Image: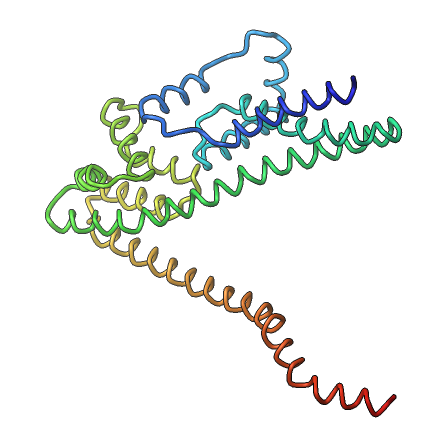
Length: 285
């Protein structure tokens, strides 16, 4: 009976974890914004949960988790991700506990704790890896966006008009985020587009986007040109991408050398040396 109940619990947890790891589908921009606003303004009704969330350590942890979720592009709130993390950890801990229970309770407890730790570490690592992949994708989209914006500025368009024109003709995560910022800045006067852009660049860890916000803020405050600054940002970003490609190619060459040496050179040397080794073995008999 214990094995049956544990297997059913493990299967349920695995199903929940797989459904959570599958990732959300494409969400419309307005619906995504409403979800983030609802999750930011929602307050727990239970006093215990409210007291726990008001603890400084919990607040810091939830803020870090929310930032990691935003960088990974996941629309769910931190409590939902924590529930998925707990489900994945239990799905891994339940079979290990059942296996350890065949020996003694202490082994079952140790294996269950090990399963919980491995599941939590795997989920957190997957979230961080998704954030790094999304950051590289946004940087790859930012380079052509800056180049197209430079062309619009050279044609006499304003900075905001250039961004609006470029994002209206391109489709990508960065274009959607910039369109959302333009819409929010045009509707509300609480913060300018440049300040919103700087906040987004800091939260998504995109220094070139922060440089664009600084260039546009300087142009707004002092009337300086934007075209040269945008072109310089685009050139620097292309050079950084070129250096990254060169470094990746060098690392790829290093990775290829060892398998090539083991899989090609050693068998070739064995074929060449086989007659000499066999003759030497005959002399020692």
